[in-house]
Length: 538
Image (cartoon, rainbow, N blue to C red; front, side, top):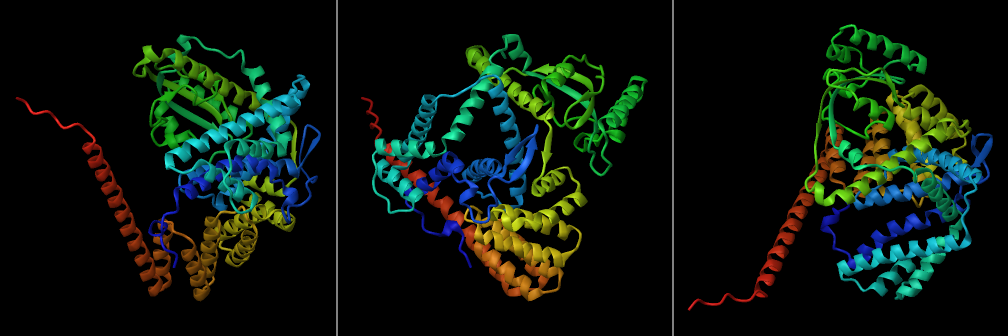
């Protein structure tokens, strides 16, 4: 059985640091990991989607997915977690959407005559290398590691060779060259950055705008959703007609609270009569909705307002202003930050408008399946996943694993356990092939395989999968869940083993906390010895 990590010997500081940096380093190099070099990745030129009559190849999408996966993995690792296979579908769908938006932005930049020179690309590569090196030096100093040893270890790991100490200058040049391996991605990022500056440069704000941003509105709300939970979808016209009827009812004297409780599609607030858990801040809704909401006087009701979820009706209860401490001394910085936030929001709205008016035809069944999954269309999701499975062998392992995992989940939800077991097995096969798939993914799939065999009545096979999952993870919650699973099956020995693991885990945590407290006390005592002794009074 795998011992808890906290029981194992601590790695040297420089190794811990090198591992953390490689996560960051992956963000710079992820674009160079193109699917062309991935076994079973399919054709780079295969069309995934047609945007305004222009075909986008798979390579473009997979490159964006690599970036998204690296960034999300880095965030998860900073929290001590990994990206499980159950999250991959959402990452791939988000990467697809970003691929479409980026293509639209590049076309818009081309229309506006925005270009980037080779000098600008070189300068950006240098800036990125300098930024990374500065971060490495800061962390190395904090951990007490030798910087040249750390740099050599990083290069050695990246290139798969024995580490050798490296000077800062050599490392900067090496990293810059690695960044330039994908100069086309760098060029695109710079072009989009110029487009962003051009489209948001006129966005500004006054101090009055800043002060208004501290307004807090207590409101009640009714939502008429385009895709209400547990109800048929509505067209925009149907939603508008329903919202207009509800608006006329409240204007005619109907109790807003009772109407929200009975008719609102916003489950979070409907049970409370349309009341939110906390006051509404500016920026929660789009700028045009914000302007209307915060212009309402107490007791006033808005006409139906549309956003991506549906049509909203608001009733203003009260408005207050919550000023931050030290406002007068920080006013200038607060105003700069506020303008920056406004520009970011304006850029998001700009991207949304480009995407909304684009003609997008999705050809890839995997992406179409995930779009249906996000929309809550269960039957359509299953149907499209079955189509995607037919061409899964041509895809990279992580994409293949994701398709089979979601298919297994869909089959499990329908009690089709034999088919679920087969899908989980196929997912497991794909995971063992993928070098970029986190270990927690294997654990999740093994738990799924165990569940499927348990429902099929294959107790011994289920225990085998559960045992393997247990041996591969040091996540306490998984071991706690396995206790309940083993109890259901009647696997007494396994229950005892899991309890023993958790006991060792808890004891190790306590020992670690005690050691940290002892070190803190020792450091405090050492600090006191450095203080001058107080002089005796005469």
